[in-house]
Length: 287
Image (cartoon, rainbow, N blue to C red):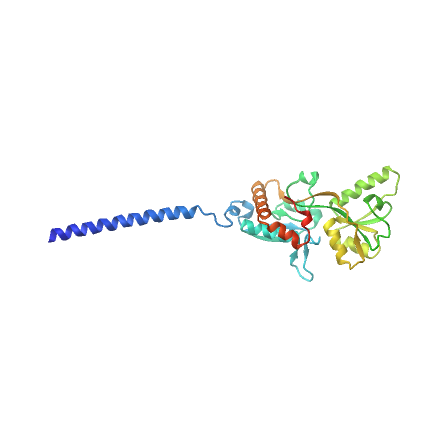
């Protein structure tokens, strides 16, 4: 009986050992399978600029409806704000916004004050010499005039001899300069250009009669006309339509690839279009 009990004990111990070995092996397999799953934000964590869990966004937040502060608050709103938040969510991080004057925003990006620019910035060859872009919206230039268009303005050339307000450092400044070069060559009166740090200051000049028109991006002009309660109107032009771009420093190749990939996902899953529809700007969608 002693020998038979011993063999029984040895057998039980062998079975237990085999079971333990099987359990450990299964545990290893499960751990390996789990390690294959990529949690949200893992890709972002591999991008140096996003390792802190934040997408820092530079924007001149005074260009409604693209970016502006909710009245009486410091809460940023607008198409660019919503899209930046959606991009951050797709990347597994959160977005933070730094309000920055448009004339210095590229310099602020290249000196690492933030990670990207989202500020209704038109892609131009001159700007592409300084930073990279990810196109995300298309817009042209329009002209804002007083109710009834008393000066009968139809094109930029019709601004000859008139006073026009414009935001500094925008593509519209270049367009006015090009128009003045043509007017001067033709022996016609040039446009008197008044530049301002922010678009609302230019609009105020038109409201008070100190300017004959304001020139800006079409979505902004349309919004200014809407808010004027009929006192101002948009001509409905789309002069030199071109894409807006998300600005990225040329030394941030990984960040550019990550943001571009996130935008492509938003386009594919319909969130991008939904944001544009929310702001009534689906006409500016890019594929």
